[in-house]
Image (cartoon, rainbow, N blue to C red; front, top):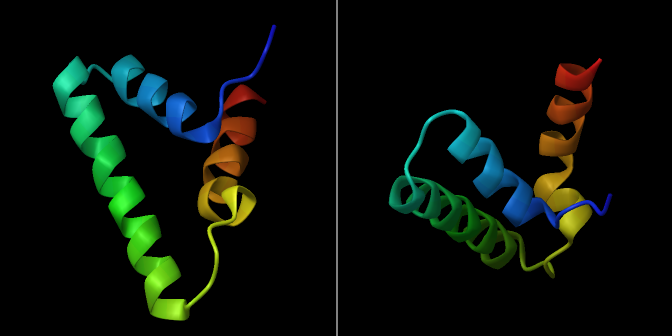
Length: 64
């Protein structure tokens, strides 16, 4: 089984919580805009592990 990139995993997580397709896309886009804002504010490059790391930790706790 292949793992999804974090943005798609976030989308799937929102869908699993009962959000419709459009609502899940809006939530994902809001998250991506927040990441972009953080990158611009701190003048850092996008790093997937930094941007989505806390979601991975939450998913690991939920799976345990």
